Amino acid sequence: MSQLDDLKAFVIIAKHGSFTKAAEILGCSRSHLSKQLNLLETQLGVSLITRTTRAQRLTEQGQLLFNQCQLAFNTLDTAVQMTMEQAHQLKGNININCVGGYLGEDIIAKLIARFIQKYPDIRVNLDFSSERVDLLSGQFDVVFRMGKLPDSGLIARKLMTITNGLFASPNYLKKYGSPAMPDELIRHQCITGSINHWLFQHGKKANVSQEVVVSGAIRCKNGRVIKNMAIANNGIARLPFYYCQEELKAQQLVSVFEDWKLADTPLYLIYHKDHFQAQRLKVFVDFIVTEFSRGVMAQ
Image (cartoon, rainbow, N blue to C red; front, side):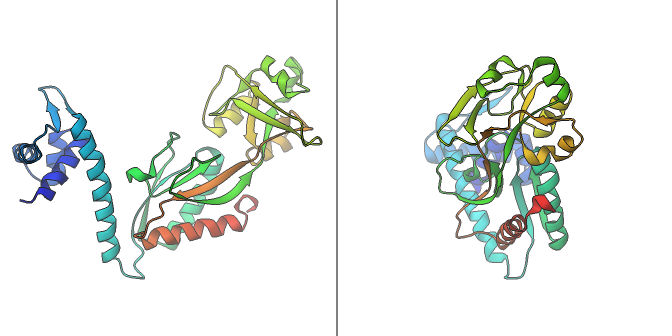
C-alpha cells in the first residue's frame, strides 16, 4: 500500500473526526485505518492525531499536514476529472455559496433552476450560509458575494450595482418621528444586518457626508426578515431598493431620507483562477454573467 493511500486515509479521518465514519467511506475496517495511521506517523516521525477513549484531535503537525494534503488532493481530483471530461461532456457537481434573502433565494435561485434545465447532467449544491467562506479550501467552486472584497488571487466578476435606501413603516415614523439628518438615527431603533456603520452622502452636495453607528433591538443577516421587521413597525431598515418595490407601492414602507443617499453595493461572482477549471464551471459563469447583463432584476 502506498504512502498516498495512507495520506488519503489520514485526510478522511481528520475531515470527519471519526475512524468509524472514515472506515465506512473507504470501505475498510477501523483496525485497518488505525494501522495505516500508525504507519504514516512512523514514516513521518511525528504524532498526527491524539486519541483518547472519548475523542480525538489533530496535533499541530497533524493540522499542518491536513491543510496541505486537502489542497493537494483537491488539485489532483480536479486534474483527474478534467482529464476524463471530453469537450462536450457537461456533467458533475458545482458547489455554490450564495447571499440569501430576496436576491439569492428568488433571483439567483431561479437562474440556477434555468441553468439546471439547460444542463440536466450538472448537479448543483446551493448553500446560503452567511459566514465568509474560503474558496481556497475547496469547499465551494463559486461564491456570490455583496460588498467590498479583500484583495486575493481570485477572479471577481461584477454582476450588478445595488442601490440602497432607508425604509420604515408609516406607523413607526408617526409614533417616533422622521429623522431629518443621518446623525439623528442614533435616537431611533435601527434594524441592522452585518453592517451597523451607515455612511451617507448628501445627494446635492458632493463633499458633504455623515457616518453613523446605529443600533437597535433587532440584528439579522437576512434581508427578507429585516424588511418584515420594518413593516411590523420595529424600526428603520437599510435595504436594497429592489427588495421593497411592492411594499413602497402599497405604502407598507416609505423612504426615510430624500437628500441623503447610502453607498451602493456591488454584487460579485467569485471563483478560482484555475488552469484546470472544469467546463461545467466555465459554462455556469458565462450563463450567470450573461443573464445579469440582460437585466435580471427587470425580468
